[in-house]
Length: 313
Ligand SMILES: Nc1ncnc2c1ncn2[C@@H]1O[C@H](COP(=O)(O)OP(=O)(O)OP(=O)(O)O)[C@@H](O)[C@H]1O
Ligand code: SF4
Ligand SMILES: [Mg+2]
Image 1: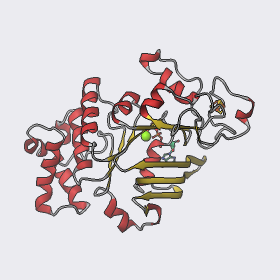
Image 2 (image 1 turned 90 degrees about the horizontal axis):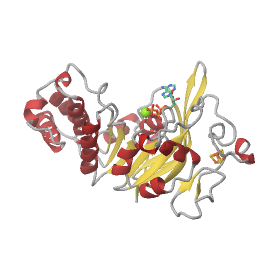
Image 3 (image 1 turned 180 degrees about the vertical axis):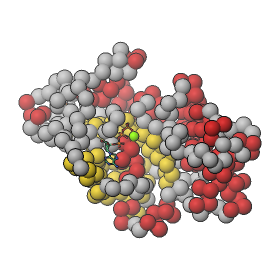
Image 4 (image 1 turned 120 degrees about the vertical axis):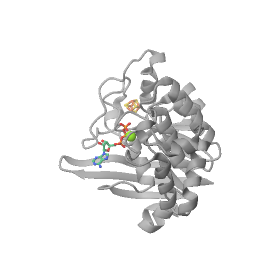
C-alpha cells in the first residue's frame, strides 16, 4: 500500500516578476517502508514539493491531490494537519538555520514533542534525551542541556534527526540533511539516516547522489519543476535514460566533473516543448515543440522517463 500518493501536483508562487511555476504536474507514489531519493539541480522544485506535502508553504497556490495513507491532505483543515505533522509525517531540515540559538537543544526537542502532542510536559524531556541517544549522541543527557553553538555541525545534524524522529513518525521528509558537512561527518550522518529509517518511509531530498544511492530504494530526478526520470536506485545509476540524469552523473567528480551546459531556466519563463531541450546535447526535431510525457521505458519495467528518445534503454 502506498503511504504517500501525489497526483497532478502544481505549486505556483505569484511574484511581482511573474508566476513562478515551481512544481508542475508531479505524480509520485511512495510505498510504505520505501525510501525515495529526490535529486536535481538547485531551484528544480525539490524543497517546494517536500513542503507542499506537509502544507508548510506560504504564499503558494497549490493544486492537485496529495494522499497520506488515504487522507487527502490538501482538503484537511489546519487543526487536522497539525495532528499529522511531527507525529505521522516529520521534516528534517538542514541544521544551521533550524535550531533556535537561544534554547537548549534538549528543550527544543522536548518542546516540539510537546507541541505535536505526542507526550506530556514531564515525559517530553525524557523522550528528548531518548531521541538524542537513539541518534548516537554520547552523554545525551549532558548534551540535551547545551545550546546549539556548543554543537559541531555533525552533532547539530544528529540533533535535527533526533527532532524528526522523536515522535516515531511513519513518513520522514529529509531536506538536504548532509549539506555543508565535511566528508567524514557526512558519511556518518548518511549511515545514521539509513539506520534510523529502516522501518520508515522516507523522502530524501538531496544534491548528494552518493548519499541518495546509499540510502534510497528508488530515485526521482527533478528538472524545472517536473519529474524527468524515476526508477530503482541500481537501475538509475547503472542505466540512466534521461539526458539530464546522464548529465548529473557526468558532473560528479569521479566521472570527470563535466558540467551540463547552460543553466536551469527561470521557472517564470519555462521553455516550450521538452524543458531540457535548450541544454540537451542530442535533441530531436520534436523536442522544442512537444512536451514529452513521463513513460515507462520499454526495456526497463518500473523505470520511467520524460524524453522522446525513451526506447534508448
Ligand atoms: N516563497 C517563494 N516565493 C517565490 N518563489 C519561490 C518561493 N519558494 C520557492 N520559490 C521558487 O521555487 C523554485 C523551486 O525552489 P526549491 O526551493 O523547491 O528548489 P530546490 O530544488 O529545493 O533547490 P535547492 O537544491 O537549491 O534547495 C525556485 O525557483 C524558487 O526560487
Ligand atoms: S525530449 Fe529531446 S530535448 Fe528532451 S531530453 Fe529527450 S532528447 Fe533531450
Ligand atoms: Mg531545496
